Image (cartoon, rainbow, N blue to C red; front, side, top):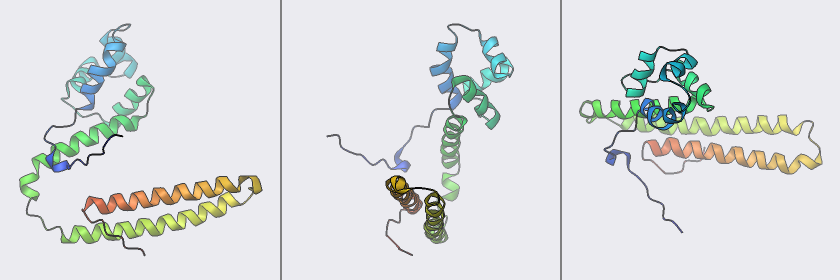
Length: 176
């Protein structure tokens, strides 16, 4: 059985890889087997210079470029946007680390707790609405699926609440 290791984000010293570099190193070699860079740029409907700058990691992958890359690669644009967001967040946290080091976290803790409670309440309301909406028109045979859907929604709500609490390092349970 494999052990689970918890990684503390503050101990990570290596930057995430820029999504353009991932595209250049992982996707482009396959595309280059049958097309030139000019043809790939034309497929993306961007200039070659823009494509080169993205692949070098010199410019960010914009939402427009993420949609284009997603279409070309057959995946979701959110993949490229999430990779870019992780890269940007890492750079910003390193750039601002000295500036925000002394920032008071007391307010942030209350904000995270309140956000967690709002999520819990909203999730409960969404559950009830989903259950009622799903319950209409479903026969006896679908009863088990409805229970499974409700259980899955509860699990998702709990996961979101715990994630919000973990952001601040506060893992105590406050049922409201």
